[in-house]
Length: 129
Image 1 (cartoon, helix red, strand yellow):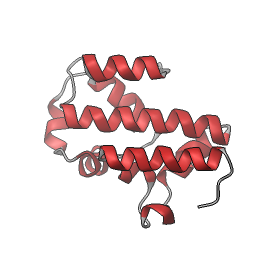
Image 2 (image 1 turned 60 degrees about the horizontal axis):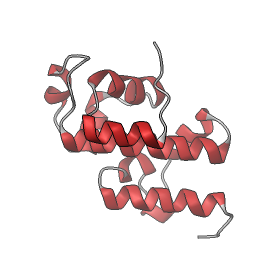
Image 3 (image 1 turned 90 degrees about the vertical axis):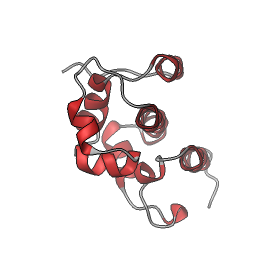
Image 4 (image 1 turned 45 degrees about the horizontal axis):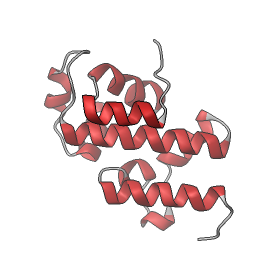
């Protein structure tokens, strides 16, 4: 499996052109090891919707937004923590600043995505919160 390397430019192009099921599989299953059932709850979609898509099909818009937010947060967390493993661990762990939910769970909305990126920025610059 080839893992997609994402940059802000690729995230923008995905936002405009859509996110294929193939990219979803690489991020959700390959990197984060999240089941379709758990991700469907986070993204506000159904497992059936995810299951019926073929690898080249585009995800529904809301689901694609969550994937793009997850990719951006993962990229930033990897830069800050220095490894993909630490990044994934942080993103999947409960966070008191987010009210006890994990950053992955908070990424289900634009507001939550902004909060996660804000927390990562504070960590990067050593701002206590």
